[in-house]
Length: 400
Image 1: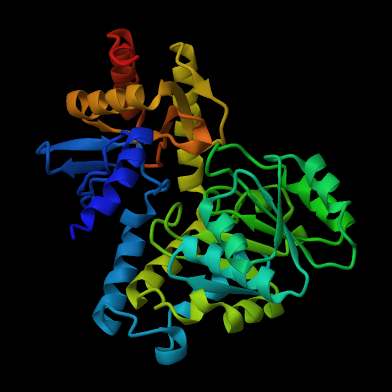
Image 2 (image 1 turned 30 degrees about the vertical axis):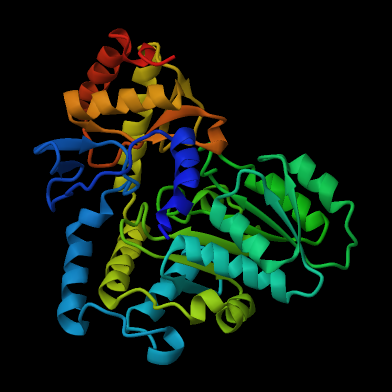
């Protein structure tokens, strides 16, 4: 039997919903970021879709830390934490992250996705009669964690504190309650009313779980995220973050009280059964976190460039969408139109921009442009010229 036939109808449906091209292999060479070499096109392109917002993946301090750890401890982690332990970098990294968020302890995971999924499924499953409330626009890792827990779950309107209160008011006060939301929505790139949601949660005796994946390192005087910027860190029960965006490395973590972290460490299958970050990766993350705690230059530069790009796009008459300060989104329309536009930007102008599409956008697509601290005003000039040319030449009108 040809089992590939089982996959075909599903793949056809997927490709119909999402006709955009698959991600391509690119080479981000040391010292050239945000330039990248495209082996298909055989020339250098400029990245406008990297989540390495501050260029820390190419920072000399980080690269040297990775190189030193690799020479000393090798490439692999050796096994799960319970079986093989962790490296000398894991414990200080967890301490740095806990301190960054004003919490007692933090727990490292091999990815931000796993950190969300394992933590939430563990909390909701093992807290007796726990009921979870989550934003409808939460990242799939949050939704998956909640659903895998088997706990009762309710979803409130996106960033709507009044809807949170309405739902909490219908639940017995004695039941453990957990409110989950993102500082910046992974679907809409808008900012959550953190203080308002925390206030409602406190009123009804609910725990709060904030995902700062896209904001940690970028906001706050020491890079602690939007909760740090807004003075709301002390109001949160748990904070989730990633090391693969502003910190430029890989991995994820959760920070909270000592008892909460021990609860997750002891009961989360996703933690105990997964190989941790390799020593060199943990060393690089530790160097990055420490650097961004003391240096605000990268954050300031990134925000200046993002503001400049947003202002100039608006002046050019392009449909810029409201979003968090560090990203710039341009509404395009249909997915196929967006694909044509991104293909033109790459092949004609050497600019690599990925479209955002899918269920969250209602079959409408947008360009999610991420200026980094290592872009320049000259880079912005080139992007604006290319966008104007593609728009004016009617590339978006080739597809109905």
